Image (cartoon, protein in one colour):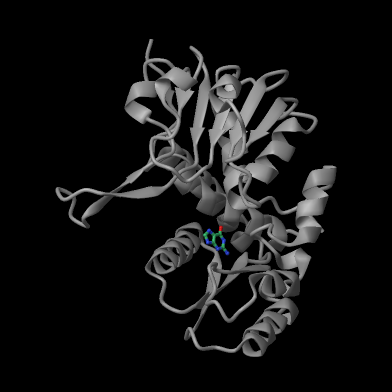
Length: 294
Ligand code: GUN
């Protein structure tokens, strides 16, 4: 049997169309148009590409967006002052500061400076804490995107054993908390594994659902999963490919071709979790404009 491929690209497009319909209705009724702010420091090519995508997606959905670009030599006080302005700008519903930041700027200080009510990335400890306690919160984009995929493909999670591979603050840790929480998607028994886990294969072989977020290409191989497992691949690894136009291609954390025959559901890379993250950010921004969380 071949796995059902979870088409994140199509799903993200559907969600964006739903958002556009809602914004069209808001506009007709003279309501508040969702407005996302974004701060981009320096010229990191990956960040440039992510931000372009976020701004374009805002346009597609009828959201307002404001992009503030600053050179890499901006001082931390100058950046904090921009954040204060965005915190106080009543028209801006939510904003993000694209990471990574230059080495002379402390990301933790920057994250803490963002008003949690406008933290549509869900990176502020107040939002992380609210999420952990099951209080309404802005959920970080990738975990939120994963939940949305599970929901829209009606994948059963209750009582299932979920093995998360990777313990990052923006994926592994929060998705472990969310999937072990009450409700749907949730009610999973979660094992959070990482680089120091012993006998990882023993753990993954017991998994009904695997969330691979470790950042190593083809790390999860077919012998590591059980028949019928649900595979969510969060990895976006650039691997050299001389035949590709850019000289590289994107690979996930799982050996996709080998797992296709064994899994029940699987996300491709590209076109899986990636496109869902921008859709999540827009959902958070709409919720911010409707004051649904705070
Ligand atoms: N850099 C990589 N992913 C993200 C994200 O989701 N938000 C922000 N602000 N920066 C990032």
